[in-house]
Image 1: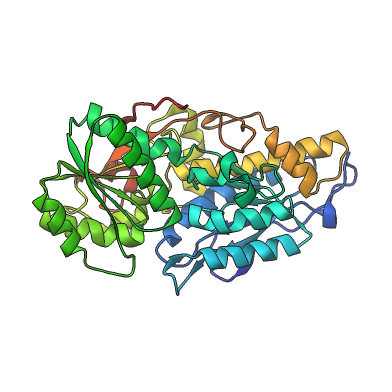
Image 2: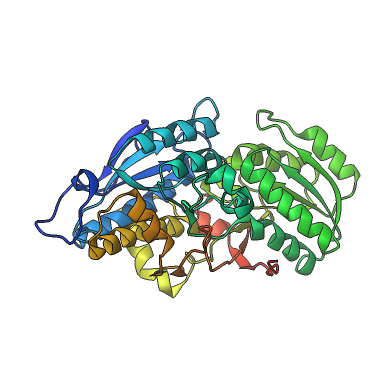
Length: 416
């Protein structure tokens, strides 16, 4: 049965709680409840739906197979987007985090989607030792041990990822531009958000390190709709390329205006410029040629390992989109389910403390390969994929996989 997206602050998903007759451990409130926190209101809503679909699919499959350790997983959903912000809202994310902490049923979180959400949620979740597994938040600061006091005041990692971070997404795109595109100069923009600034900072640092001339750096106001002035300035500098760090709310009007003012300049961004909302919001020919990266390996296009998964997804969510982050979301849910299963098998109670420790110790084979985490919660495996918007008139204009083909893995940047 096709699911309908509910935009209320809290909405129940999945199946009703069901406790098995016998099991090895015990669960708070008789059932393991997992919170899903994504921005379902505003510019990020459609991409958030793709993530939610992946999460729901994983939990539904686990439940249909008998549950995690014999328990059926129940979920609650929180909307981290607001009409006021027009996208994800860090203040709303913080308010939701406080609600999660206050709800004794919740033993883990899947989400958030954006790093701006994660930066406000992480310290609140840390105080309650409530682990979150994000499928798409990539700002490296949240898991950087140098910022332990700020983002995990209790010390232990509570923010885990099923993809790598912007510590590589920005730098590896700089490598791609120099090694594959042979550019000499670039102008850098960001949208002022935690995610956008972080990815732009890391790109700029690597660009300078490998000899790309950075002609300038500016921050765009997300509440403006016309970026003529800044783009005219960049055009006058004769930049070979433009790099944008940020999400679609600013990226959509930027791409439209950039096509008008500097159509021949190479343009690139990170995963904030990938997704159905950007494709629909900008369209062709303005998006033609834009490069963008993603933090997970690319799996959803003609990859034999996920053929059966794609068939199940299309049957479960007919007519709805998907991308690589749908798979990282699916895998994030599996990480939580696997942790529940292992805690139950150990005989310990399934609570926030045991779940955090179990997630930390994850060694799970998933669609994207083996998932395990370092001491900070980051993925051990690290891959950056590059895509390019290219209009394919054989397929519908909103057919995301065919309009944004994969072009390769970005050259790696050695980590110090």
